[in-house]
Image (tube, helix red, strand yellow):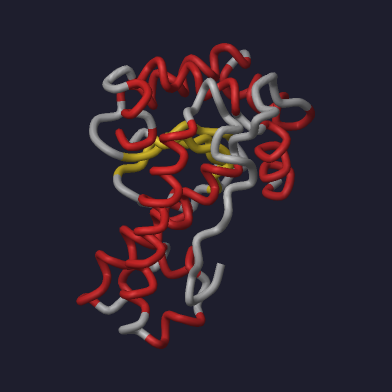
Amino acid sequence: MSYPYTLPNLPYSFDALEPYIDERTMHFHHDKHQQGYVNKLNDALAKWPEGQSRDLVSILCDPDSIPEHIRAAVINNGGGAWIHTMFWNVMSPNGGQKPAGKLFDAIIKSFGSFESFTEQFAAQAGSFFGSGWTWLVVDQEGKLKIISTSGHNLPQAKGLQPILVIDVWEHAYYLKFQNRRAEYIQNWWHVVNWPFVMKLYNQII
């Protein structure tokens, strides 16, 4: 992604994740929410020429370098634009199943079993208060951790490399699941794109 930023296409059709993630939600989520973040990010960066040539993640990980009068707009909308693109890619109409190879071994080592991992991940995502994201990340020692971030804050700002993320903002699930976030999370496992997650993990290690 580079300035001026454009809304990336979904890697599948809007109805491809049915019945787990509904078509109507995907239209609103992608065409309205992410498009809004992209537009507002471009508006903010138009006032900061020096930031237009910088990598977006590096900007978001160095908030003090952002001029104060646009700092909140760049962080909120830049994070929203970047994370949503990752979120689309960690899902697939051919998702579900389980990871394999080095990632599967690392999950077993860190969490005891794949089932224990999914339970811990779902519990953290389900209990997170407010709007944000729950992640599977690789720390600086190469270990897997489950964390949550509020708003549109990136794990990279804490020195952590993300490989899996679920959106727990209400707009990600409310049209279909209303207040039943746990049901949304349970359905989401059916569309997790483990080959993509494994690729990210292998690149990091």
